Image (cartoon, rainbow, N blue to C red; front, side, top):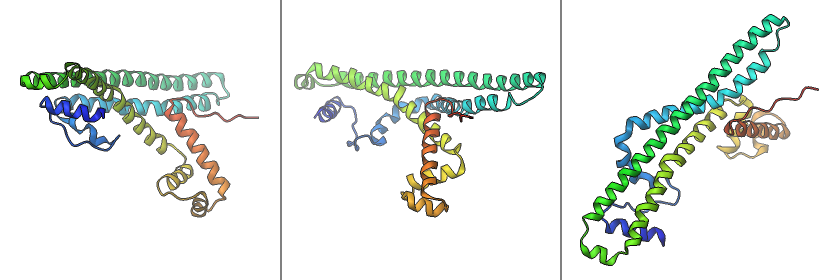
Length: 238
């Protein structure tokens, strides 16, 4: 009911409204394309910063792992200090890159969201001001004001936050999948993409079904760890 009221209000105001798309479909955002085109350069920069931040997040646990595994193996104290210094410098640069890329991505995405929202509000205001007195007699003023504030704020949230986080998680998910061990990645893809059962995956890989379940469990843990921005689980040595 609310969606129908919103569409009628936009049509009455003279704003073109597309046919309603399926709930949650990306096509529902196609109406924002005319407002995004003037900022194509900024959008490209935001995407580059997003990829850089996602890559730095994925590399950070590897840099920490390298510091622990390779920085303490030297028997000579002098060599150990040099190795620690080299790996610590690498870890520092990865952390600095993560901070810079994340800050730049946040700034660019927020800036784009604010500008798109401002342009959208200006366009709607211009259409409303061109309406005849009959429009204001048949449409409640509070309803129009609600659409101008609530709907544009929702667009700002989508463009300035939700869309960016969705793309970031997608890039990080693909990166985490690529960083898995080959056997774990193959088992996960066979189950998720091909829809095979554990028994069928075991037959394809030529391993017991328990091994398949173990690989899938470790793959899920590793992907969740990377997506959360944490460190891979350290194996306990007894």
